Image (cartoon, rainbow, N blue to C red; front, side, top):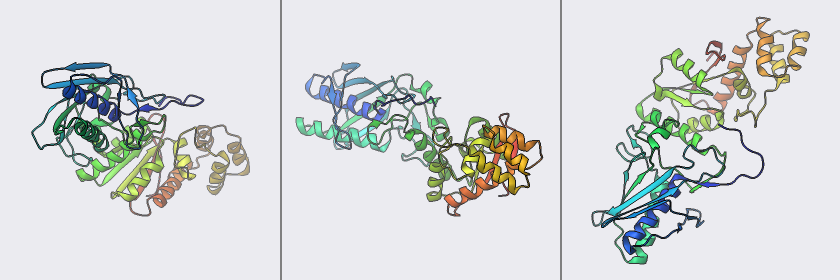
Length: 361
């Protein structure tokens, strides 16, 4: 993830909000012959933003509108993408139904909030669109039976930068958003992906999952335990969000994998492992080494170290199993967070993916 810029950050709009606004504009045009531009919608918390149309097309019995997504200052993979909603009449009494257009994925695995075979348009955006249709239908005394096809041209390529493939969403992106608003650097979409990954793995019947802090440790732990891709969780810095969700949605076994520095933070009790929100405490590491038998000189050298990597280098010269000790402490912290509902082990890898530390679990 890119570094968060200084100063106040500009909020943006979710793909769900953009799809809703496009659908509202297209439905209005289908009924009246004219597109509202800009088009306003009501978000779940009452805000009423307006969106300029980037595309509009009115046919004999269908209409299409498009909006360019503005994610504000968030490093969102879909920032600048064109979100299209095409609407046409549905079967009388059918209400609002949804289709996946070009660049929007389809659910192929159980465990998500949507059934297998459904377009990857999440429940909250569906509700937003259905509510927008209801309001417009009431204004124009229409039945409101409508098919909404959402597309994001180029979405299949953008989806390769997401975890959709691992979640079993094939063919493109998901239409996301609970509030309709993107809060910059809130990382909500990442945490959402972790939670959905757990849901899919549980629904698939897997009993052993691995959560890794980065790609090197993920590849290494997958090889170590011969795990299928669906068992892997891209935890990143979000140890707390991962463990909390697993506490309420447990599996039999969890392996936590990462580098020495990140797992030092977890071992010390930090749930957010980002460098901007937690730091490696070298004094605490010196105390850990003291428990392993380090003499006063070694402890002093560790206390003056400038990084976890330097501590590891100093300790490795003495033969003290500091990585094993950190892995064990991280396991204890994780087990406390999981309230004993999941068996945990922790593995630590170096930058080359070599196993250097392992808990007793």
